[in-house]
Length: 323
Ligand code: FES
Ligand SMILES: [Fe+2]
Image (cartoon, rainbow, N blue to C red):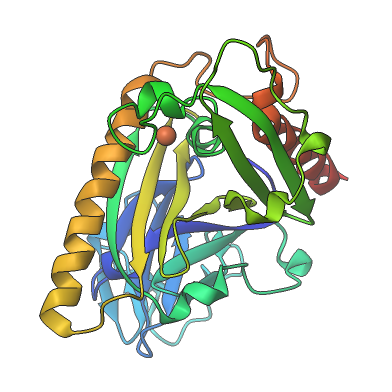
C-alpha cells in the first residue's frame, strides 16, 4: 500500500449505530459512530487480552470491550478499567492504534500513515456532489492494484466487453493520451476498427484529444468514467489485504430528479454497472501475480500507457512516503 494517503474504506451507509468489524489495508479494524454521528476507527483487538472490540457496546460515544469492560475512546486510549475502579487513572500504555477518519459524499476514508503528514482532506471528484447515485460493492480476490489497472485498461474493451461497452470491434488502440496532474491521472480513449492498413497513432500524434472520451483516476483508490455530462460511473477500490479488494461501484446521474423515476433510473444504472463489472471480474481474478508492480515480468504495449503511468507514479509515491 502507499503510505501517507487517505483511503476510501467504506460506504457511509454500512456504518450504522453499532460497532462494525472490517478488514482493510491488511488490518482488522473496528468502526463505530460517536454521539455526534462521527465515524471512529481503531484496531480491532483489545490491548488487555486480545478479543475483538467489535463484539462490544457503544457507551456514550465510546467503545466497551465485551470481555472485561475496558472503555476505549476514538484515539484508541483506554479511559476506564472497571476492575481497577472508575476513578483510578489509566496507564498511557493501555491503548490500541487509532485512525483518523473523514466522511463525505457518502464515503468513509481513513488516513493510512503518520498523523503529522495529513495536509488536506481526501480528494474527491467534487462535481459529483449534486448527482444522485446508487452503490454496489463487489469483493474481488486480487490486490487492489490489479482492480485499478483494469479500469485504466483501454485495450481490453472489445474483448472483455464485446457485448456491452466494447461493442463495435474497435480493436486498434490509438494512443492513448495520458495526462497526470499531481495525483490525478486523466486518460483519453481513441479506439477504432482495424482496417488492416492503419497503424495506431502515437499519443503525441493525437490532436484535439480533449474532445475524446476520457476517464480519471486519483491515487490511491478512486476513479470516474465520464459517460456524459450528466452520467458518471465511479469506483473506489478498497484494499482488504494483499489478495482481496472490495470494488465499490457507483452509478451517478443528474438527468432525472423526479423521485420514483430517479430511483428506477439509478437502479437500472446500477444493474448495468454490475453486468460490466462482472465481465471484468471474470478475467481479472485470474491474473497472476495478484499484485502488480512497476518492475514486473509483463510485456506491455503502447496501449497500456495508463497502466504504465499508474505503476510508475505509484512507485514514486511509495518511495516518497518511505523517506
Ligand atoms: S480483553 Fe478486553 S477488557 Fe479484557
Ligand atoms: Fe472493463
